[in-house]
Length: 208
Image (cartoon, rainbow, N blue to C red; front, side):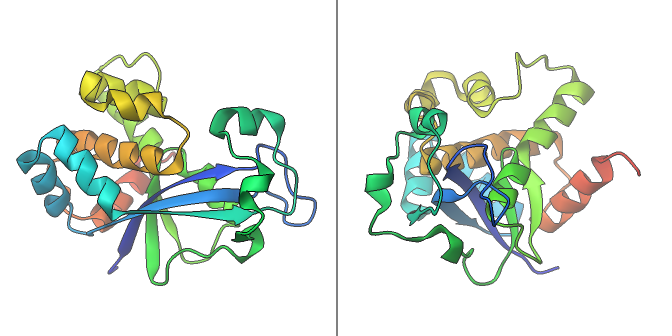
């Protein structure tokens, strides 16, 4: 499988489902295109300081906002700070599509983002939350919890302080997904591509 890979994160209208589309709507989508060859990602992480790596990922990231056709829940607004008035001139959430050619997306609790995107066909998912839980269990790391900010703080400390302090901004969270993935890959050194990583994560799932 020759994959175009994107790390993504979304901000949404909340947990309530749209009455027609039957899922929350995306109001902000951030993405960073990644090479399917994981060694390229590892090389950048190895050669650059953390701050320089974050700067590179920031330069590669794109952020687009969308206008929903349902109310933004109060609690969701308290998290991401986005008002409906900020979205009036944006494209409709219903018209959101992933970049052409994308076949694999990576995110933390990616199933939620995938559902809010309307479960587009032909898109496979890699979840850093699931990988972190498996790594924690297998290696006995003892994470306090598996929230994205907790894991980033565990691995990067003050080097990623600004990202943690600005959580629930879609691009910042997408950058954190990539930073976390780099650390999790250290536990799976023989995996060389996202295609192989996807096969690995699928093998981890309980058999039905």
